[in-house]
Amino acid sequence: HYFLGFIFLAFIIAGCKDSASVNKSDSETELKENQKPNIVFIYTDDLGYGDLSAYRATSVSTPAIDALADEGILFTNAYSTAATCTPSRYSVLTGDYAWRKKGTGVAAGNESLLIDTQKTTLPSVLKSAGYRTGVVGKWHLGLGGKNGPDWNGKISPGPLEIGFDYSYIIPATGDRVPCVFVENYHVVNLDPNDPISVSYKEKLGDWPTGKENPELLTMKPSHGHNQTIVNGISRIGYMEGGTAALWDDETIPMELVDKSKKFIASSKNHPFFLFLSTHDIHVPRVANSKFKGKSGMGPRGDVILQLDWTVNEIVNTLKEQDLLNNTIIIFSSDNGPVVDDGYQDQAREMLGDHNPTGGLRGGKYSAYDGGTKIPLIIRWPDGTGKGTISEALVSQVDFLRSFAALTDVDKKYDDVIDSQNTLNVFLGDSTAGRISLIQESIRGPLSYIEGEWKYIEAFDGPKLVPWGPIIETGFQLEPQLYHLKNDPKEQENLASKFPERMESLKAKLTNLKMN
Ligand code: NG6
Ligand code: CA
Image (cartoon, rainbow, N blue to C red; front, side, top):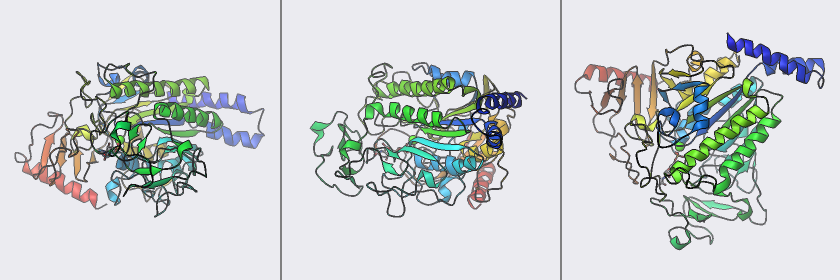
């Protein structure tokens, strides 16, 4: 197998490099660890199935991301576990569906840490396999104990308590306060004489809000997002203080790339796992001047180009550091796309022919496939699967057990319920994929995919996402059944035509819920 050949090569190279600087037993341990490939997981935000040229977009070009697909495996039937950010990320990191735990919907910006610190996680598994683990970018899984994060003190528990050795994070989202980075336990550049106050209930302090001072805005909200103004953009939530710590929206990607590069450089002598969770292409979409106006599609298109730049920077860094041939690169998105997500950024007006979902029904928030069917590309270091397009049914919840298997962690992980080892599918060695998977939409109703069929639970809720993005929620008072193979756009509800099939899927979903 190529992979083993390559590992052998890595072994020799590592041996040559390190033998001079470390004593024998250290180098032996290090060599052992050097056999394990690094893992860089680039997790993008709100990027749709149709947003990349690798996935047939023609109005936007993403050459760096496409190159990963040319050199790796592109999955056409991959799913996040939820149509919003927090639950999808919860699943990636814990190997469990988020709906098993209460309160894992879209998290407020001052939410407590949502992942139990006792729980097995993807980074804790990799850490126990000898990896150095780091998270850079959007977190959105809560921070701190039951009173939430202490922005002016030690912010804990957080990523470091669930298995990361290093963290440099946007605490929640770019559109939620506080607009500051947190490195390990502390807000970066915080002046103790200018402490941060945050409230998600009522206005505090004197900082202007989008509601009261719209004349101060450089980007106006279309829905919500009319609370504290930071850098001319009004956000969700109120804050005051921490002026020196505020991020600059135009350089967030550069900041995240810089921290990723430093993490990679400082981890070189270990296998490492970098979870680079981009702010792009979430709102507010503020492209750097390098990309502003370059897509012809307005800020949403511009930040797709910016995202491609991020990927290019990471790949080049790995090349420069001579690590590309020992690093697995995973590229994916946390949920489906949205055009107008609450700011007047001309995303809808300038969309042209571009179809962010690639024709799928619904989008972010939705029970339809537009909510959870996402791009997934895996580039293996030795050329495994190069250029393959895999139609296998795969889920992000399976990264935990699959990478545990890859890195030889021989443990049972009894507390991990949903993750399955589908490593051979991720490697392109098998096309079998998952038998079934579950998707969660915005207010909690679940869908169940099994083979070519999909069942959506009956749910009493609005037909369109209520705050205006013009996305079908998929909520209907009657259960829905679609034949995804023949009807990937979920147009014809076959529930009354095939009641037995519908009942059988419903029963299976009910069963899985009770695991
Ligand atoms: C919604 C926000 C949206 C986005 C989303 C979370 C409004 C009107 N909409 O409530 O802009 O922040 O939450 O997105 O406030 S996610 O990708 O992090 O799940
Ligand atoms: Ca998201």
